[in-house]
Image 1 (cartoon, rainbow, N blue to C red):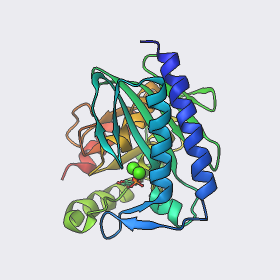
Image 2 (tube, rainbow, N blue to C red):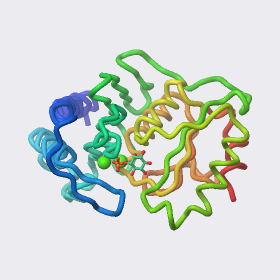
Image 3 (cartoon, rainbow, N blue to C red):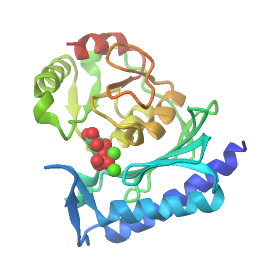
Image 4 (cartoon, rainbow, N blue to C red):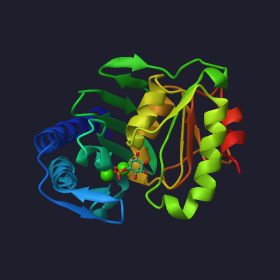
Length: 258
Ligand code: IPD
Ligand code: CA
Ligand code: CA
C-alpha cells in the first residue's frame, strides 16, 4: 500500500471538509441533538458526505468508520476512520476550536493521521514510522519532567452526569498537581497539542474511535506515551485515554486511577 497516495487522498478530503466547515461557520441553519447536549449540525453531515465521496472515489473498496454514518464495510484490511467535525459544540457557538480528523488503518494498525483546524489553518499529519508534522515541520512532545510545571488538558463526556463521581476527582487531582488544566472541546486537537508540546498531558474518558484515531498516531509519532488509565497501550476501541510526554506518565497514571 502506497501511504503517500493514502495521505494525498486524506488531505484532499480534509481540505474539502475545511472548505465546507468554513462556509457554514456562523451560518448554521439546522442543529439536531443526539442527546441533551450532543449536537449535530448540517456542517457535520455535509463535511462527512464530502469526505466519504472523495475517499470512495479514490479507494472504492476500503471500509469506512465515520461518526455520523457508522460503519460502511468492504475490504476490512483497509479502513478509514473519520470525524467530520471534532468540536461541534464549539463550532455551534462560533468558537474557532474544532477540526477535521481523518485516519487510515491497515489490518487494525493506524498508518496515516491528519487533523486540521480550518479556521487557524493548523495542519497536523503523520505517517507510521515517519514522525509527526505541524504545517510541514517535524514536531516532538515537550521535555518537561516536573508535573507542577505542566499544562494539562482534558474533556468531559456528553454523559458526564452518570460519571461525575469519576470525572471530578480526576479533574481536581490533576488541577492540584499541575500548573493548569484546560478544556478545549476537540479531542483530536488536544492530542495534536500534546504532540507539539503545547500541552504536556491529556486525559479523557468515554472517547470514540473517530475522536482518537488520527491524533493517536500523530501524538505517538511525536514521542507521546498513550495508554488507558491502567497503563495498557491505547487502541482506538478503548474509551479511556491518557497521553503525555512520557516523563510525567507514571505520575499522571496515579492521578487518573481512582
Ligand atoms: C467531542 C470532542 C470533545 C470531547 C467529546 C467528543 P464531537 O467530539 O472531541 O472535546 O470532550 O468527548 O465527543 O462530538 O465534537 O465530535
Ligand atoms: Ca469527536
Ligand atoms: Ca464529530
